[in-house]
Image (cartoon, rainbow, N blue to C red):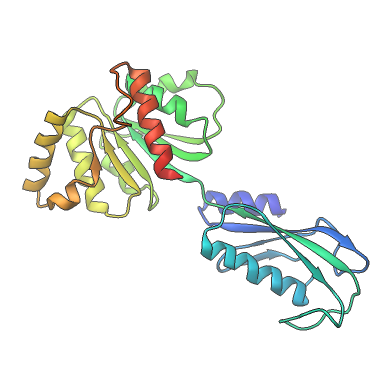
Length: 261
C-alpha cells in the first residue's frame, strides 16, 4: 500500500496523522530525498531511515498531533557523531531536511432537511473540505443534489424516515443543522442531538416563537435549560438579515464555518 493509500484510509477512518518527508538530502543519509512515513498517535507507516533520524521525526510528529497543529514545519538534522542525538548516533555524514505535514481529520457536518434553504446550504458547504451528511425523509429532495457542481466535500446522502438513526451515527464533534419540513421531526432531532452530548454544535432553523415552544417541550423531556440553550436558534449571523433562502444559507454557512475554524 502506498503512502497515498494509507493517508486516504486514515482520513476515511477519521484518524489524524502527520506525513513526514525527507524534503532534501545533502551527502550520505539512510534514505533518499522524497522518502516518507506517516505517523499517528499510535501507529507508524513507512520509514525515513531508522535510528535517531526516524525517532526524532516520530517524536516531533506526535508532538504536532498532540498540539493540534495544522500548518507544515521543517526540521534540519545533521547525521554525524558530533551532532546532538537523543536516540542514538548516526554517522552517515550527511544532512537532511525533514518536512512535517499534518493530515488533520476534516470537520464533519450534517444537514437534516434538504428544502430550499437546505439545498442552498449544501451547495455552499459542498465547496469546502469537510465530511458532509445530508439527510431527508423525502427521497425526491435528495435527488435535487444531482444538480450540484462537482463537490470538494465528501458528501453522503441519507434517506431516513427517522433522522435520529442518521444523527446517532455521526462522529463525535460533528456540527448539526436541523431544518426539516416538519416541526415535530425538528423537535425529535433536537432531543436526539442533546442526548448525545458530544456534538460540536447544534443549530435549529426557525423563529424565536418556535424556539420558545421547543425550549418548553425539551424541558418537559427532562433537559436542563443550560443544556437546551446549547442549541442555536435562529441559526446564522445576526447581522446578516433577510428571508431569501440563499441569504439564510449564506448566513448559516458563515456561522458554521466560523465554528469549525
